[in-house]
Image 1: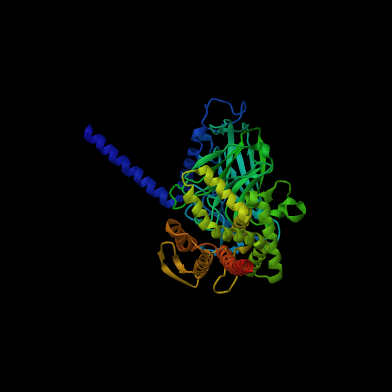
Image 2: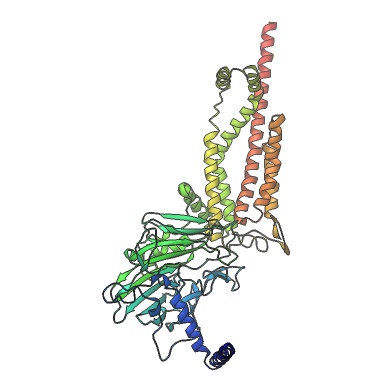
Amino acid sequence: MKKNAIMAVVCSLVVLGGYIFYMGRNNPNEQNANELETAVAEQTAEAATDSDTSAAEQVTEIPDAELTAAEEENEILEEEFIEVKTGKVYVKFTNKGGDVVDFQLIEHEDKTSESGKVQMASADKEIVSDDNRAFALNLGTGKKAIVNDFFAVEKTGTEGSLQTVVFTKNYKDFTLTKTYSFMPEDYMFKLNISIKGKEGFNGLAFDGSEEKGGKVAYTLRTAPQIGPYFDTRYDFRDFLFHNNSKVKTKTLSGNDNKYERYDDDFNWAGVGGKYFCEIIIPENRDTIRGAYYSSNKADYKDSNAQAFIERKDFEGKEVNDTYYIYVGSRSEKELRRYASAANNGWNFEGRNVGDALSSGGFLGWLESILKWMLELSYVLVHNWGVAIIITTLLLKIILFPLTYKQSIGTLKMQELQPRMKEIQDKYKNNPQKLQEETAKLYQKVGYNPMSGCLPMIFQMMALFAMYNLFNNYFEFRGASFVHGWIDDLSMGDSILSWKANIPFIGNNLRILPIIYLVSQLFYGKITQMNAAGGQSAGSMKFMTYGLPIIFSFLFYNAPSGLLLFWTVSNILQMIQQIVINKVMAKKKAEKAETTSNLKHFTKQGKKK
């Protein structure tokens, strides 16, 4: 009996293996279809309900076995790719889920991208997979598997006109349609998601988030990671949520590895970097359940930066949702187009898309003034590098009275140091008397210790505003200052490159950081006047020589536009300080001469 059982098992395995081999050779597509149906069934495992419940009696929570493709004579069983090109973008779709696998901004170059253009479907091509694609749908929450079925596809229109790509999948209980529409000269496109139920269908409802409760029909996601390549040293990724009055941000550090809910209501949501952003704007905000943001690394070398929009469950036979999606530059020129219907092809307005611009915070008003000065300079010279120099020069001229006042106060304080030290030594055990005598000394010589604070505060405000402006200004991207040396003000300059990667330096020889270092050392030397001895002298030497060397390594790969500003600012500040020092030296000489003459006349008077 045992021998017969073993023989039966062996024969069964041989027959089964032969059948699988035969079917694999003669009908591979049917095998793939079975695998796909299994994958689709798995993605709704959490949404299973009692199989005896009538779908017509309540909102449908699709059981596993029913979320399968309807039998069709011409069922699509292989992957197809569809392309759309406009004056702004090149988009490549897959009929697997009806998703985007390639989204290039054809007006913007990126040397790190294979295509040479900024890639917005994902800066890391490894992230685009059967697990994660741009504008993929999850039936249910974002934690479920994305829809991976093959859709029928139809494209209409040509380059230069309205183009649409329609993806349709016929399931047993409903038909799912995704329609993408592109205007010839817009970064914004429209995505329509349609669900039409069949007999017995009465809506979609999957278990939603535990935090807020409720059920979810589907989840729409942004791209896994926007371009260009995410360098955490000089770029950033923000999750953007607009709450009808302003934008709130959640900044990704690069190592967060999070999947978290955004708890407040929002007008639109998306992801933004220094120069580009991706925003999903629901036409009807009342249909949205909530949003999540993800920085999960999964199996990839870099963190993704992705937003998930949950659509509320619904009742009825049919639903049609519209989303306006902006994928493009984070520039005032492009984003402001959607403030007025007359300025864009969609006649879109009223949703504060322009608020996606990177803001200077409480210094935004000052940043706006500096931006106006910068753009006015550019109109005159048509070179952003020269415009930076002119703007920095104008700023120094405007701030010169404050700088001069601060320098005078500093020099007065240096003159008072010997007398201050005498008072400190004399009253070192009597703090109250020390304070009184110090105040008397200040009053006697006419020095106000607060006189240098206000100029310094305003100069620091201007410096921070300039830093934020020059570090994020979109127009610097790809703008050349000196051809062959500084070809892109948003990146570091380079005159020589090599393959090996050196810590803090990388693989490029840059001249601008060296010029910055030299200018900083000279400026420190000029301002180091009458330094105190002992510990203070050691600290002064470190400030004069040590910090500039450290900063030159830290900012070696910083954007050349920012370094150009700092370098020119140092040179102009150095010239100002030389002028101030000469003026002060002249005043001291005149004062000394006056004192000498008074002593001479006093002696002459005594002799008489």
